[in-house]
Image 1 (cartoon, rainbow, N blue to C red):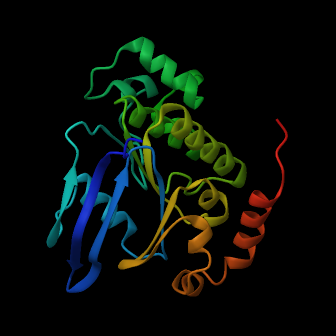
Image 2 (cartoon, one colour):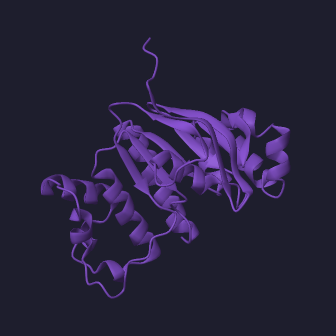
Length: 241
């Protein structure tokens, strides 16, 4: 059996901001086909870790290693189109990259943005914009998809649809996924690994082991009851073929 390739890894990453620790000796790796959910309280350093891994900011110490064949797709935590720049969705998707147009339309169909291509980018709703950002990330044909809170500011229905879309992309295209999320009961059951961050890695492992970890339970005490009910239901009921 072939060992899955490590596509991107963090080694002893530390970062400070104005003398305050943001990341403290963080190490982990994302392998081919994995789905890692990165969780932690607000201000825990999750987005900073993502930006260090992408090379958008430089760590004070430690290193990031990427495989030679890595292709990254990324959606940021927040993105606001400039209301004074009249750009359509399709022009935004083509911006600064060469894309075969048949592949663009195929990807837009996958993400449910085909009908939005001629719309002004600034006119999109929150859910529509997130799907357009995901479409742009997929146009590079990534084998690593990094998503920083992709369902932020979406209603419950929008969250469910976007999570289902991300799950389908992971399963059908086989790309590794690293996703930051607060929505524990919706994403943990789909994850192969969960990484709990609070400046340092508090715990990491498969969901069924993480929900029993004392540090995890301390950090997410207010969500444990709902998470346990959802998670146990997901694993205890039978599926018919």
